[in-house]
Length: 97
Image (cartoon, helix red, strand yellow):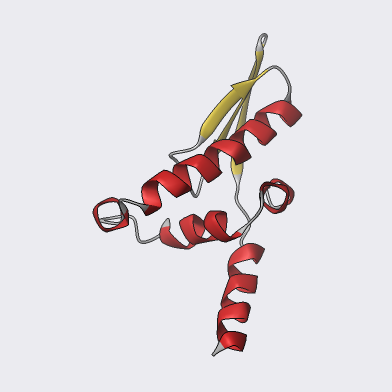
């Protein structure tokens, strides 16, 4: 059983998270496509990505406490919620595409 759980976590961590990047004169906005609750704006792309990852972790933790209510109609987002919960910020940053 432990091996199955470890394999599942490995599969979740391998999921890419695609981002949309919107640049303007003042900075860069990044939006998580698969996890639309999360978006951030910063002066540089690197700073925006780091803020986005931090935001995703915060949202995932908050939403997991209301999971039964939040999950309705969001079947496609559930694997990403789980991915975010089991991944470190460094792991999430490396999987942004």
